[in-house]
Image (cartoon, rainbow, N blue to C red; front, side, top):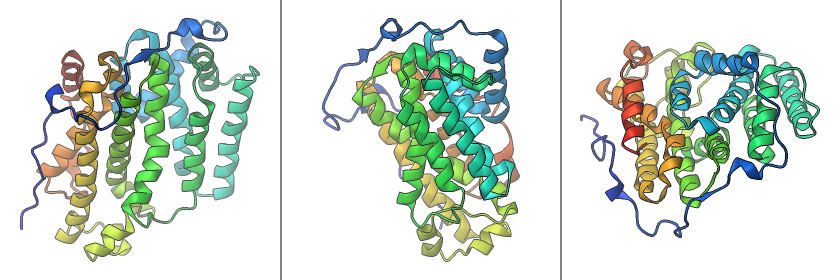
Length: 322
C-alpha cells in the first residue's frame, strides 16, 4: 500500500495560527543596549573562522543565518560554530574517553568565557562577544555539551519520545539562543522553536542513517523498528525493503507534525523573530524529497544539495513565514 502524508506538504499562512495553544504574550524586545558590558570589537579573522566552520559543516543552517538581521547574525554564527565544534567530537574519535576530554575542554572554556578569561580560540572569542552583547544563557550553551556527552555511549534510542528529548536538548536549544541573540523573549516564539528543533533532530537522524550504518550505529527509535519488524542489522546492511521505508515514514511523519505545529503558531510569533526559524524551510524541503524517494533513506538522490533552497528561504523571509 502506498505511503501518504496525513496532509499535503506546504507552507501554511498566518490564518492557520492555532488559537489558544498558549497564553498570548506580546513580543518583548530585549535590546542589546541593556547588556552588562560592551563587547570587544569583532575581528575579521575570528568572524570569518566561524562563518567557514558553519558553511562547511552545517550548510543549510548557514544559508538561514545569512538572512538574519545584522544585529543578531554574528551572535547566531558564533552559536552555530560552537555547536559544530561540540557536535563533531563524536565523529572525530572512536575513543569515548578522548571524546569526553574534548567535551570537558569546551565545558571549561565556557566557564572561562563567562568569567571573562577567554582562551585565544576563534570560536570561544566570538562566543564571548555574543555573550557579552546579548547575555546568552549559559545553561542553554551547557545543554549543547551535555546532550553530546549523553550521546557518546548511546547505542540506540528506545523510543521516539527519547529521540525527541535529545532533539530538544541538542537542536531546540540552538533556536532559543538565536532568539536571545535577536533580542526576543516570547513564549510563542520559544514554543515554535521547540517544535522546529525537534523536527530538525528527527530529520538529522534520518539523514544520518547511511553514515552511521557504516559505523555500525543505528539511532532510529527502537519502538518503531520493532513495530515494523526491522532489525539493527537490516539498517546496517543498507536494506531498501518496504519495512525500513515504513520506519522512515513514521519518523518523517513525526517531524512533519512538528513543523506543522510550529507553523500553526506563526500568527503569534513576532514577525522579526520568524527569521530565526527559517531552517524549518530546509527541514520541509528534505521531507518532500524523502517523500518523492518513497521514504528510501538509502536513495543516493537524498545526498544531493537542493540548489533551490536559498530561493525558498529568501521567499519565506520576504513572506514573513518559516
